[in-house]
Image (cartoon, rainbow, N blue to C red; front, side, top):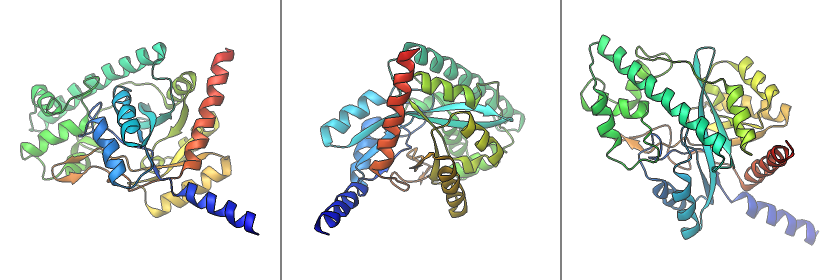
Length: 303
């Protein structure tokens, strides 16, 4: 009995190692430099945090260095932008090889697509009687150091708020910039299946981000069957019903069930999506992500 109790205590201690596996920095459209996110993770009582910027790995080096300095485990990640059935679909990748040249070239092209989309959004806003100049958006982004110079919808939302077109960042997305917004546009992008392939080819573990936001569980199942290793079960914008449904789906397909706040920092006095640490998982999940990555890495080396 003593051995069993000791083993249980060890497992319980392990599960106290909390990880938030979804956060953004100034390398893409977050408001904090990577090192600040890592320090916020420490303040939130987390054992580790993933840096998952949109279509870039530019913030990873700074984050890892800060993690090593203060004792926070930084999980290297990315969130790749794709389109399916006319909607944005995001695929998270963990433990990718951030030096893989093919992967980096592919990400560069994705950022070019994002730039075209930004211009199209501003054109729609002008048609709606809310002119916003690209220079104004870039000025907002330049307030904070950036990795690859990525400009995204949160930067546009900040300008809409500053000009009085909306009263909150959430309103900017609900009325204009989100999937059902009046200024929403979706230029041709890669498919989620392509992102899964890219992540695996770079030795990483592909996980579908916030599936509850897509309203298309048939697509979710299709991507699971295509090759996802996990799905983000717990997310700041998921309802309890969403989390229960996707937990069952993960169990049914033997997937890694992840959790993340999708923290972007604070804009207009409000935290975007959720505070860092608002959704978290344990070290068992992180170990499974690492193991899957090693499997994909071995597969890559055999080809």
